[in-house]
Length: 418
Image (cartoon, rainbow, N blue to C red; front, top):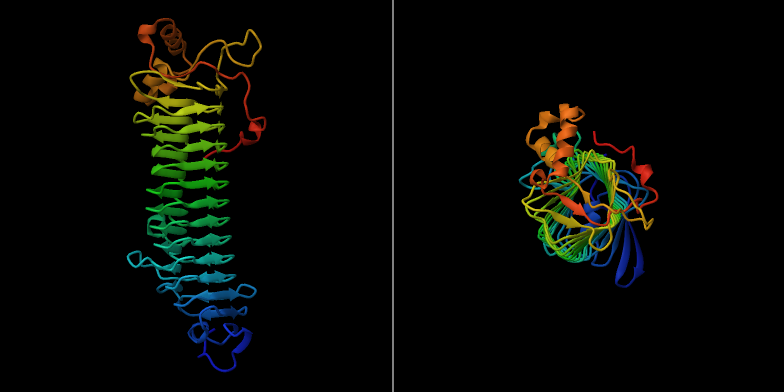
């Protein structure tokens, strides 16, 4: 339905001398109402379809009643925000352009548009869902964002783009079929909580953003789950990453962070830990992955304790020149531990070693997997454990738990990557 020019038929309801509510009906122009509004006003849009591009250049609230649809008709940004203290809520925003160079978005929040809020909207068939740049204290809440399923992943934009911001809050959004779910770079003091992300490249592509929190998010059936890179002072807790092709949670070039109480199930690699130092990784459930942990590029001086490593095809992939001890404070549980507990204190009496010379040969020569059950390979494994000269450096746990810390671990047993 084409929008007509804004006319006197649009209702103006005074809320106070300094604030008003302007109502837009089908056939009228939302853009005209925004131009007529004063700072602090609310523009209410009734249910219908409005083919418009909107520029919000003053402090106001744009509120949909029963989720009206605003369509950009496959060009430009559908809504562009240039003013601070703008609130957008309750709309269906769709059909942006597809120009990656111009970063076309359903909602584009320009630099300086601080304290923006986008909540309870559906953003569909846009290149980028929400683009947030150089904004302070903005909030992206409870939106449903679905990308351009007609485009290949490389030609799509991200669900939510957060660039050079401070104090951003991205909470309870549902994102699917974009390139990356949430892309974050060069930002500070951000909170990402309760988001659900699936069928994208990376659930999050997160770089150079320190002093922030990731908690209670669920990322599943993506190429990769949470990719947290080149950061420090993060809290990563209570997230669920399952069924991702590559990794559940990537910790790459990360320092001084706490990673706790996460469930990492049925991924290619549960944790991919690369160049990570001085972190605490504790109380996580790592279950049913091809590799529970892929550890490389040093990644020493971390406290890794109280975790459950259950039924991973390979508990830890680790290649180094010397052993690395985990579980110094409290031991981890390893489902393939074959030791005993003679005094019944719940802690194994024999040191757990994650890898041996057969594992290292297997990584170097993948075709060796075809012979893993053969008597010759089993004999080689036994002999290597008896003679230290053949022993391979390994993750060692001197206090292995006899039972899992997580009593509900079995419900995650059937999660698998594609």
